[in-house]
Image (cartoon, rainbow, N blue to C red):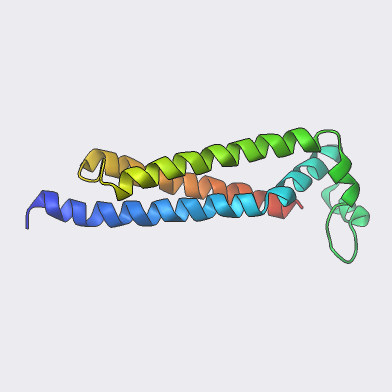
Length: 138
């Protein structure tokens, strides 16, 4: 087995696995988009000089979430459109990437595969951080 074949035996499955992981992270961000918007509006509506623990007094005691009036916040619609646009672009780019992977357009280019693995890994980490960070705020 040559060095080229051994590298492809590692990079191609890694590229597929990391791409699927990134797709799942984007799907997770899409699924929790309302919570992300609500927590960002709630965090921006709280003044900076208030203490963090004092905000729990305004939370719904049953749901432990910000008041539902934030859905009627003037910025909600623009933030919802902005987040939906970003997620739609991410899905479109993911579709193009999966087509190039499944049809073998760039499958034997070692540098391209390595670049894809690295960028999808960091993309997955950043999207998961985005979802996790908004969950901690809300």
